[in-house]
Image 1 (cartoon, each protein chain N blue to C red):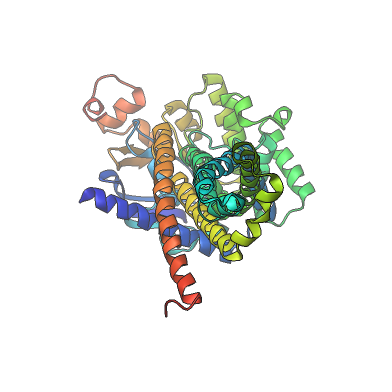
Image 2: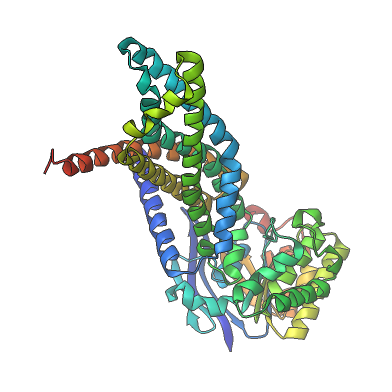
Length: 251
Length: 259
């Protein structure tokens, strides 16, 4: 059963076409990883799936509801089932680490101050950042900011979590730790994951299904095994990181 | 033609944004603590500059009027006239320029940075309305704080006028203050207050709109700040003319000169 789907979605920014005629279904509980060269529309695809980007054409369904026809009030219960880790983390820089996690909990309006603090501390501890409780985002490292972003995304116990390049700019060890953390949290919460990454090792590690975006279109979707053995030369060039091939002309 | 279309596009966008702010203000619950924080931060940010500018505007007005009134032998009215001019025109205009230069630019830069670093998207994704959370409190904060700053700026301008009146024209403090109530009537105060409020609405709307709709990274934030300053200055001057024009008509009708 699909939790999100796109039907003939076209997204343009001013005169530039970013996504053209995308059809995609994400099943409940699966981990779908979007791969593809830089500047081809991966983040836009993720943001369209999460309802953050409004397409010029086509339909977006989230939890069987046609997203673009809903008012913000009607979207709110669904939004609260989602968590997003942004590419640049989008942490609130005037809030401390604990306040960043507490923010969505406060907005719920159903928890007491004590409950909010306890829950925020739990998530901070879950990502191994209990010691950074009262520090501001610009006082912690890039890896810690990623972990804080993950903790904030998880604060509302979301059913759908979007990760926009969760390992960007991190060293291999920290990147592996972050992916392990995402997999651990997925198994614990049985949530649906949509992630963007350029790192094929992490993609294979995380994905139930992989989709490759090239030139604003979805070139293929398939299991990690199907992706490895895909006959398209562009897929093969990308996953093996070859310097020569058909992608060079595009990127 | 394209230039005109852009100007009308900007004006239309700003007015629609004001409508959205008003709808949010009426329909959604705004946290009082957020509003008080904004009022306080605007007052703190603009307090020293408003005090200094208010003092010197009062002083300048007094010197200018003293030169003229000395010729007519009417120095006794110096305090009343310079205060009246400050209350009706210079005071609100000065506060508005202060607010647009300091608070307006700061607000659009702050919101613009939040936009380009995806913090505004994050607020929405975390199940909150960015308008309710960050825009409306700032809007109310700027508007309410402007009245406090106007009052304070006017007090400082009277103080500046008193000192310069004494030094420059030999009008002592008692004499300076004596004719203020006769010249500065409630209509002048009402005019000043309405102007101050309308200028503050212009500054608050433009700065939040420009910040909220920023695109394109650091360069985009810079553009938003410049555009906020230019647009608020132009709109404040236009609004000054408009409020004076409307005020004059209302006054004529009230006095029975016009039906």
